Length: 378
Ligand SMILES: *[C@@H]1O[C@H](CO)[C@@H](O)[C@H](O)[C@H]1NC(C)=O
Image (cartoon, rainbow, N blue to C red):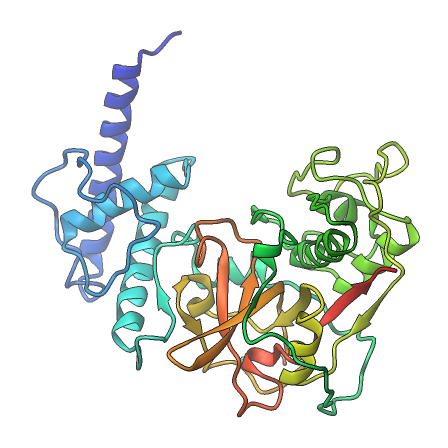
């Protein structure tokens, strides 16, 4: 049966209306929750463009109930969300509203204009448990090429005052993990792309999927950054992203059938010295893969400015996520790392995060100084 565009829209309108009724009916049973914003809306029209986009939106106060519905509509469309039934949609709407409250409250508590602000990222309909179970799955227990915890100091001559490997063409576009917990593969491949671009003068996006499929200990439920490097070293290179595409699922290893990108082999990999200076000296040479603790709603909803990880644990081995430092800069005298994430461009600053270089913390913000790794290419 062919359903016309108009009747499709009508159907959507009916479904959305029904969902809202269901949702507000559920809410009425719990009058204590979210009372301030959740009252039955007076109108059910699909709103027109008060919020043409939610991705750059900074939320400083709680929108009224009509606006919340409108935001959810615009957000859903922008992020291509389709829910399987009314129950799921009303559950997701409830999560969205609760996240929205958290975002606004957290923004109100910012202590300086430099402090991180939160917004509606592509994860706005995930509860913190869902977010953490899907994305914060890095393994560190069995794998640590340097396992003493001394802070190490190093020197290097004259690292530039500011640095951004993106402007030297050593960083590929931001990717999205899309429901697969393989940050370890994204960070490892990003670091390899960086050193290959620096050594050959040519930036080629490389295949995260190949590392995910072929590195036996890693999967969508976590993996080891170092094993990612190790696999690419053993394979004498890695396929291009376009020849071995990302599917967000671990599948059979096809490396025998797909040829390596020219000149993509690495000689070995090393750990950066475990201090702020150690990271600086390493990043001055190439993009650096790092691990941090990121099981936090402040990370999930991060939208801009400097992330300071105030509530991170002190244990430097307690890390959950891997990313790629691609440079450093400062704002109003506060120094930060420029960090590439693999959560898509709707997360953070077009997919990037600024992480404070906190000289007062032994291992840096969320232990970022503790686990820096880089591939070596001759
Ligand atoms: C990591 O830190 C968090 C937050 O402090 C804590 O809840 C969790 O139990 C710690 N995990 C490990 C493995 O130590």
